[in-house]
Image (cartoon, rainbow, N blue to C red; front, side):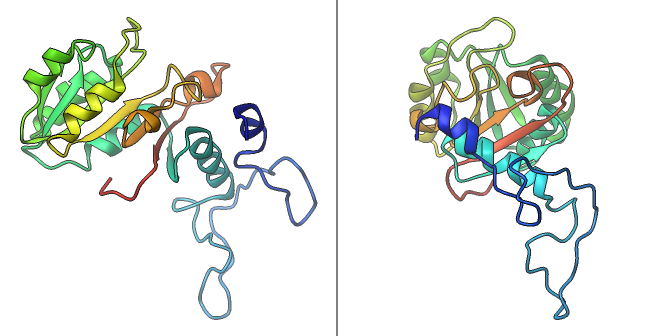
Length: 216
């Protein structure tokens, strides 16, 4: 399918109860348990899963060419979940022009968490090569960057990071659907869906997309 067709259909399904072509809003926090004690419909508690959130996750995952996604209450919440998957002593290589909220998380919270963090201009591949270490576990790319719109060679940085078995994350907030990070070597894609996916300054959200099974 072309991207325009995917954008219309990704994550959408016909409501089996009414035939509605737009998903109804599901406000229930809990879902029916079968007589056998199971949840055959796949939904147990909204904290774990919800039809609306599932549709959002499937839709954005499809648009990005991923296999699964997890939605969050904000882009910063999505970022935090990735950093929390690391262990004290792990080295993080982050773009010097990363979104302010991301760099602040790293400097003020995860530095005290015990992560070893290096900020580097990822538009300079020589600087990336010098900064990467055997203990590098995560390379955080952002392109175009916010706010300076710096461009990172995703494929080249991914190759450098993968040489030490680091996971590559691309914050794709500024170029959703048109830039294809998975095709260029990224392992995870992050969005602040507040920005282009929301588009009208009235929705707060974030999402992480993966295309392979991994520890994250």
